Image (cartoon, rainbow, N blue to C red; front, side, top):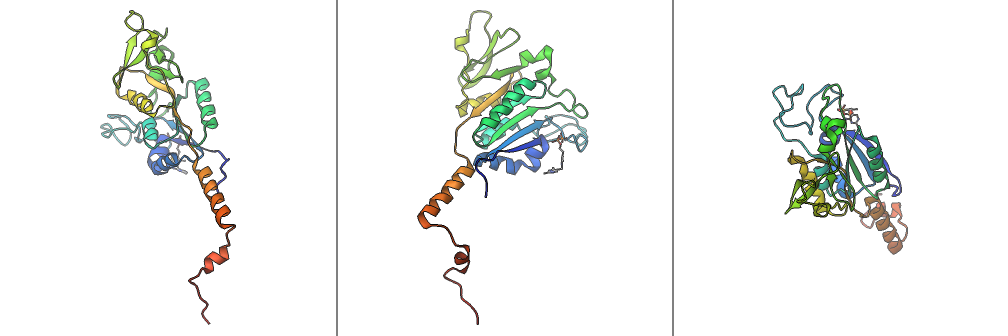
Length: 254
Ligand SMILES: Cc1ncc(C[n+]2csc(CCOP(=O)(O)OP(=O)(O)O)c2C)c(N)n1
């Protein structure tokens, strides 16, 4: 029997987690099992020496795609949101402080937690995330999501994200046209907003969001199962396995 108070941690790569284990992943998230997933995304199969994975980019040249990848990649955060995950976050290998905070948040979350971690593979896909992780470029290419705070980015935090209808756009706060009060304010409880933020990946002019996209409070699968069993027992009393096996429709052959 599953112990409702037990946390299970899974560390997986993008290949194992989204192709081989993709089916398990989506249903585990949908059911809100108390499992914390750290998905290390390096956009390649590393251990097996550099074949393309489900997160490899369109056109990416790998050992198994010498003329370039011709299929569209999974966006792990979008996949998790679409699978009804109750906790979805993104972090980076080269920002260990923020990564630590995301792991803490996953640990504190009630139920399934999904943390995508951008991870450099220095052998088969070196530099895949450098624009987000390196000193010279990261300030203009990432935006940290903080619950209740406006989305600000840039070296002097003079740029922000505002919503134009359902479409996020990057604006400058320097020329006086927009101020911080015009910006999108992050809300971890808003699943519509989480999808909008996940979709920012499709627009190269927008920074990549890092942090907690969504954190919802739902009962876990384990708790609901324990409750259901307790309710059945209080209604019908303790079960008797032998009696159940014998049933009313069995007979003895002599
Ligand atoms: C449960 C399980 N055990 C063993 C394997 C075999 N296996 C395939 S890839 C791999 C290593 C994956 O390493 P990781 O750093 O997650 O990804 P990489 O970028 O190297 O592909 C292993 C152990 C597996 N797929 N699943």
